[in-house]
Every structure is written in C-alpha cells, then in structure tokens.
Image (cartoon, rainbow, N blue to C red; front, side, top):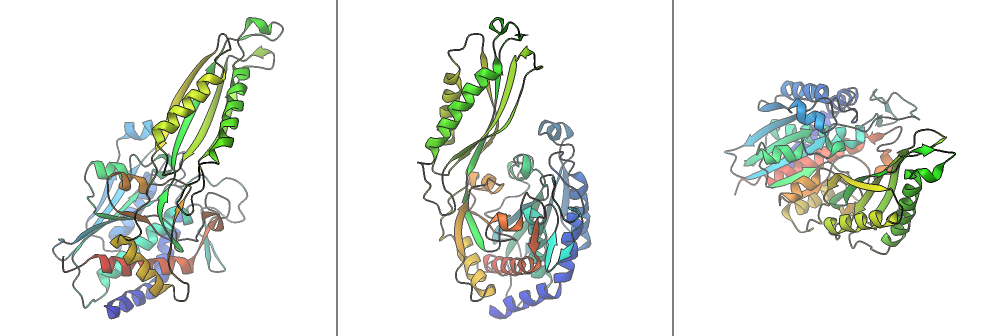
Length: 418
C-alpha cells in the first residue's frame, strides 16, 4: 500500500541523522583484514543492535583455531532475527561485511574518522561495506517501528559478517552450513545505482619454484630458481593475452583476467637462488568452468620450465571463490527491488541490472541455490567511491535512498497472503 511506503520513507528521513551516527561509529572501529582482528567491531555492532531494540541478536564467536587457520586474529558473526506475524512468509537475509582492506597511503582525512565533508562521509570501509550494514539495519527498523496498515508475514535475518576479505568461509558460509540462517531470498552488499546479479569467480595460486643454491662464481653447479620463475612468468603473460578473446555475455563483466601480484626469492646477490615464489590472481567469468581454468593454469606452469634440470615446481591453490549468477532478472526479488527503486529514485529511469568483475560473499548464497541480489549503498561503480583506495567515501544521500528502497522492497516481500 502506497500509504505504508510513504510512512516508511518518512521514518527513514526522520532518522537519517541517527543512521549517519550509527555508520560513523562503525567506521571509527578499525577492522582491517589483514590483520583480521575483527571481534571488537562485531562486539560493538552487537551492542548497538541491542540498544536499537533488536531483541533476538546473537554474537557468534568463531573458534580461535579456525580463525588462525584463515589468517585472522579474532572473529565473530552477528545475527539479528526479526519475525513479522507468525513468521510463515518469506525468509529474507540481509548480508554485509564489516572487515575492510588496510587503509594504505594517500589519505587527506583520518581513515578511521568518519568525517563528513560536503555531504559525503569519508573512511576506510564506509563504502565496502559498513554503509550497507547501516542501511540494512535502519530499513528493518523502519518496518519494525512504523505503524503500517498492512500486516506483514515472514522473517528477516540481519547477518553481519567479518571475513569477506579472506573468502567468507567463516562468515556467511558458516552461518548457512550451521543453519543459523535459513533464508529463501538474500540481499547482499552492493551499490545504490544498480543491482548486481552476477560476479566473477577467482582463483589464487602460489607457485613455488625450488632449485639449488651455488656460488655466483660457479653458477653451473646450481639450479637457478629465479631463471625458472622467469620462464613461468613469460608463459603466464603469453597465456594472459589469449584470455581477452573469451568475452562474457553479462553486462558489466568483460573477460577473464590474470595478474601476477607478488614475487619473492633469492638468498643474496652473489648466490644462485634456490627458491622463487610467485602469487597469481586468475579471475573466472561466470560462463567459465573453474576446474578447467585451474587445470589449464597448472599445465602452463608445469610445462614452462620442464626442460630445466634440478628444478622442482609446486602449485598451491590458496583461494577458490566460485562465480555468482547470473540470477534471472524476472525473479520476485529483483522485480520488487526494481519497482521500489523507480519509486524512490524519481526521474532516473529504470534500475540497471548488471554483473561486476569482483567477487563477493553473494556467491555463498547462490551456491546454496538461494535467489540473491547485490544491492546497497554507493555509486554505480566502485571507483567513484574510492573503494579499496585512499579517501573512500559515500554520499549520505545514497545512504538515505538505499535504506528507503530496501525498506519498501522488504515490505513487498513480506507478503501477508502467503
């Protein structure tokens, strides 16, 4: 009912200042991953949700050994469940992550300050994706606290996790595997000006080349690991040139990519190097078979230095993030989101549906056969918000609009007739 949606919009407008302060508190808690000391922000968020009236809120600490194996220091997940009516309608999860990449150099403001300048809030993680946590929280609060004419039926889980930067295995995947949440629809962190229905997968490999050290005056008595590594690099860069011919049919996703991101090796200037390590990022478009991409990669690496005596090559897969989507555009979830987007974002056309070349936690829900869409706070493309770069920011207007769109979409999905 239009009157109910107008009431939801008014409530969010009236509480915009509170939502902004909620977000600022999140930005001011460092949650860099790595190093991955994320229990403090989870604990703060758990406390904040309790103060806002979310009675069924859990702080789910993850086993310390599992956290250490994931390369983190501390971790907990925060889940707040809200039931409408008898809870027999849609079961919706809203998932966003509060761990962030380290701030790096080049900031003009304090990366942990949450400073507001010219209608924008600046800070590490404000766009990716602490603002989504704020918008999701206040969208659900609007439904809880607004007097509505229509009776809602169903449930919403606010599922806030803190290991997206290390793969999400102990966050959303764990919540699903342990059936802490059992959604039939999911909205995951995204942007305000488009809904993302697909993203790339990603394979990370470490190539370890082992040779034999020798004095630099007698190089023929050793086996040069860096020389073998250079042959591998040449083969990989040649392979990379072929990937551009495989173009995705999904808007927003181009072709597979390959990047050599890290190289280390050697003992000293006057020693034949006995070891070289190479780290590689291979992005997989949704149309590709990730297993075949891995087999192809391994064959190229193993053959590149096969003719060198005394060289041993080991390939270790560090990350295997599956691609997400594409989710059909005619799903009820996307249809409801698109209709409410047009209502709130007047005179801005239709909501664009597209894919993105990054990978995110949405894939865990998609892998469980749950209809999922990525939508939240921010511009159409990550670069505009300086995501993962200095001076990361979001427009507070986008925060407000996203919360309104989400509240009205959740209203439509919580159908009292089901």
